[in-house]
Length: 262
Image 1 (cartoon, rainbow, N blue to C red):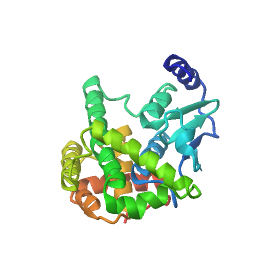
Image 2 (cartoon, rainbow, N blue to C red):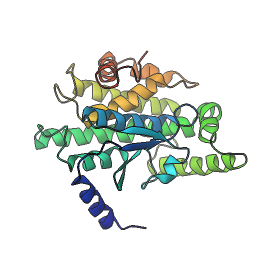
Image 3 (cartoon, helix red, strand yellow):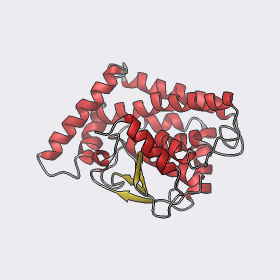
Image 4 (spheres, one colour):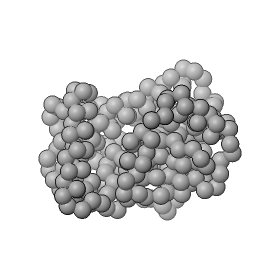
């Protein structure tokens, strides 16, 4: 296994090269396989790359998670280099002299990182809880979709392995023993904080988007457009029309007809 130092050197070397036209973004299949948190993270990276005006092509793979250097999706292949997840991809793009935050001072950049951490630690963890702990969602959605690309009995084995992995993470984070009502309350508190920060501005930090806007778009758009047995999550998000307007604005400005908020 490559050392972190070697990985860091590889990223630095890749960042020195120009952005090629054949960049591939790898993720699970959208129609039959991808789950709520992975879909949100993949869409967030797509939004970020579009905001940077960088070319890429989405490459669905049934084993994208296992192809990723971090075990998480999405990841991009840029020339000879592979970089995974939004934070790593942002860092890689920044190394090429392309930044959505170069106009922000250090205090604002610190605020941005704090809000991104908030989204990661609340909305994404809530999505994992709902997909893997809520029995109704697990039985009707997660169990079917996550195992759809494997034959029986491998699909059953893979679902059990993934569920055990997620539950272990939720226990470490003290989320596993929360009630579903407590999870929804955490999401509402997070949306309230994001709503206050947005404060009717075009984007979170003014007239131009940042990776925070991309991250929030990815998660909220996915929540709004993903059918689940329970509607509580989408109902919470829809209580914040300012956040919904942000999602629609990013959809129109960067995705056009690719995606649609209803």
